[in-house]
Length: 92
Image (tube, rainbow, N blue to C red):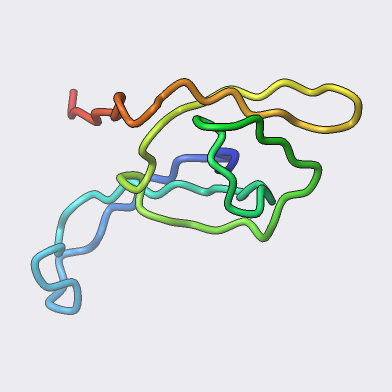
């Protein structure tokens, strides 16, 4: 689990270095992971107080959007995805 900080649009140049991705647009997600010690919030009550190092990854690695609620100094994750929902990214 992590907090989505920003979505970056990366236009790759036409260059043989990029091989099959040359000239393509890539969407990257800047994410700050939550320190949940691997717990699954869709199966049990999961909370955290700390985050880890911010990272950048392909936006397609995001598999669900969840909520969070702060109570008594901790953030509690609200995950009702249950493996049933998957985001779809479409071009407009």
